[in-house]
Length: 131
Image (cartoon, rainbow, N blue to C red; front, side):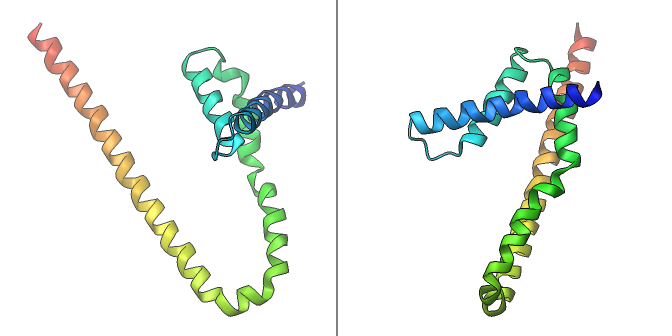
């Protein structure tokens, strides 16, 4: 029964992706349809049109099996062996640099959000004391 539930939840997420693809094609958007679909899913979750429980198991399943989605890309790299031999060091440098930048920006963003949340909590406490 759990497998059926996971399949239905993944199907809901795929439906949002398909809708996003259709919107991207109809409106000739340069944004990938899958991104539009995930944005639509996010909006639907925020507006409580869809409950988190309706997609949570499916999302967790997809996250757990994410490695499988990278296998075709890894196999495809074999076709570009000459490029890797000639420019491999530059490619690795770009990958490492971009990874470091993303990690740093993620940390800075998380710290910023944490400070904002702490500030709101402190502000709420001060407001309660004043009232």
